[in-house]
Image 1 (cartoon, one colour):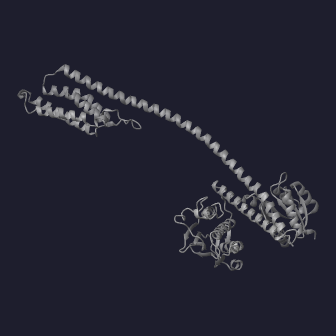
Image 2: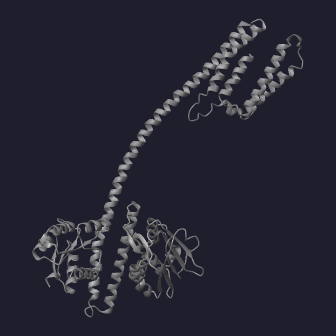
Image 3: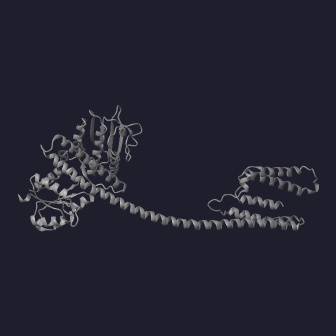
Length: 125
Length: 414
């Protein structure tokens, strides 16, 4: 199903590949972006069911991409999961205030992340 | 002559040195001299050399000599060390005035008695007294001047110190900023590579069969365990840095301590079983707290990990939660090595590690219990430890319950 398309954005190529590989193994369709700008463009083009966004990216960061997605009526159904390496609790609050559906702190277990994505999508449908 | 002596005596009183034995001897000798003089003055007509009044003068001279020889005379003859300032008491001014007035007073008495005036003697005495008084006054004025100078230089020093302080303050602010940047660096730049290490090892370990044989799998498991340890260390250091900066902010919400304790116990179970330790949880009804869930989990994890670390194979660990009207109680007890004498006071200190632990090469940084205490105290609770008879340790945490509301819903969750 096209709702199962997952967009993953992280400026760290290794982590991008890690998350992408894990999600693909678990049966998701995955598109990946190595920057916030690319992520936003892909989101508008492919309309993924869920976007997994790293907060700390150069250019448009994860929170800004999230805000843009929330401001876009065509993307109103998109779920957003934020990834962050920052341990600051204030980031979590900012993320939720900006409309994030979930939050996963780095470092994370790829299996756990995949499980969260699955839970979010199942909760939605 | 007697009047001059009296004035001099008064002067000594003014110097406030009158408590020394030498001065008391001096006073006694002057008094003896004055008494003898007066007796002689009254009965001068009947005086003959070798009379009994001579004894008074004799006693006076002996006392005089004794005063001069007494060790405390040194103190009396030296200028007194100035105290923080000179004090211009009204009593001292009165004494000076009295000394100055003694000459006219003598003149008046002589006149009233109709006695003949010895003008040169009175003039010499009055001049001597006046000179003494003026010297004394000059001393006081000089002392005042010195005091003012000292005050001026003290004020200049204070201003300089303030400037220095402001400068140091700027440097401290700068250092604090550098520390914050460093903490942020650790936070981000250590966590990102750790994500890759932990994640890829996990991905690799999932692949069953070739090309990964058991031996290589065990190597990767070491990498995985070590990464987890490194991550824990990074987290602990970050926590302490934030705590030291006074930036430990609790994200409080309503939660069930019983549930969190059970989850923490379950999470630690594989580690306990790996060491052949029985790990048990005992919780009754829900214990509702208004607290930081993540931090309470960290607290429990620290206490349980600590127990696992110090309990030998075949041991037993019990995690227990109870609630009473006073608050929530959390206990983690073990059958481990226990505490050495005097260690109970030290174990919550930062970087404290028991000498036995170091000797046995048990891994750790000495931050776990320090962090545990910080979390408990941030929640206005208390943490205590006691060693059990025959080995083993009990950690007891008491947390105030803001909300105590066991509902059927929560029981279902628990």
